[in-house]
Length: 197
Image (cartoon, rainbow, N blue to C red; front, side, top):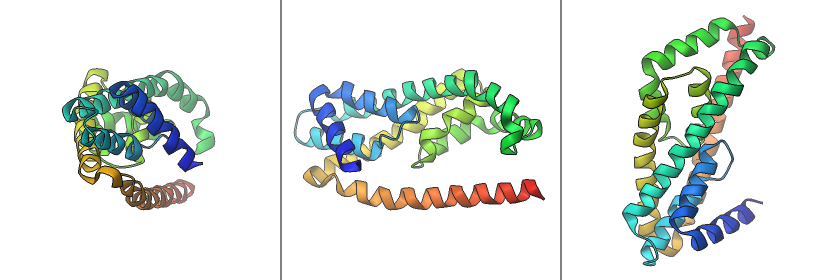
């Protein structure tokens, strides 16, 4: 299944160029599992082949990721918050936790958005809690762009340097993704245990 997704993604990027990179990153940033570890390195490979410009490929990934994150933020704000306010108690999320999240994003939102953009898995979903907590929108957009830029720069550069071996990155990042998911599951278990106590 993943190989099929990779094949389709690379075909679209090869045919659409910068627009393909931007669209792929927008989809990934809107909480749909289309890995940037495929999109950006393949863009870097196309740069190495002389089909794309490096700076424009990086900017396409950054802008696409920012636009997708804005959509995810809006979903969190308009749909996620009312849902949690109404049904959060069934998921052990009280008004106290929601208020705590609001205070967190009011105080540390910029740093949270920026640094989580540099982490696989988490970077895809951070826009939802930012929207749910109604983080200041302009600051959200600015720090999303600034956090997405080094991620796009790094993965595009690695794809450029690896050339035809760009897919090797997918294997390495897959192992890292598993570690992140395990850490998130353990954090969730701890939260549920703490709430029950």
